[in-house]
Length: 131
Length: 172
Image (cartoon, rainbow over all chains, first blue to last red; front, side, top):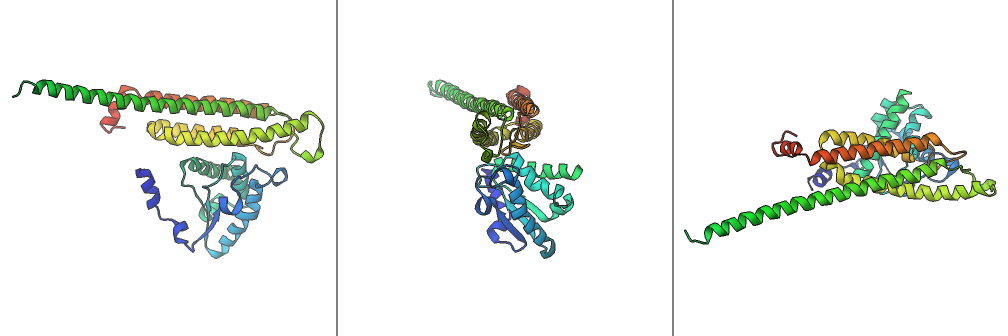
């Protein structure tokens, strides 16, 4: 109960439509059923999400001073392969540094089951940075 | 003092203690049921995942390879849906179980949960191509066992008297 209240009490860029954030709602703008790792092996892949949604938003954020907020809730689930390719791929494939991604990107997950996946996405980015 | 008062007080105290004991017992039973359900889900997901990783799959159905390969492609697709569903169930069960664990075990379960999910749906999940991957299958089994063990230890610790006392005296 108190946990739910604490979540509600968080300042939300989503509710206020904060102009400092470019919001990507995965379930609304990409897919409710994210796919696997690569574009060539199926739809709604991590690679497609990175190339078509994340990358343009992050490149624009570099110049506009906005941050990119990815809303992770509302989907059937995220395969770890999707998360790894979508987020760690930014560092591995697209030349972003971990620090830069950290300053530009915000992952938002309200449901606890997505919070675990959010943590995983960050740890994949950290691992890609270390490699 | 009326004669019936001691008997009435005794009955009230006895009733209250019984009620509290029943509430505690019911809570324990509910928690334990969730724990067993969670373990079942983890084992089931691991079983399906092992089959999935060991399948020889050609992920390009346009090749229309006859026989085993195409059949395995369809089988892999079904397994992917099942495994993803189980992953969500496991994470939902985790929502209920984790807050009840002590802080040490919460962190341990969190870490093991991530490793398990990574083994379950990481690598080239949903992009399978080629021969069976024995290593991935073994890693899933290993991580499932480790996760169950850490949850079991956390649940076990929760019902130790020392843990209950720590919670009562806020030394937890």
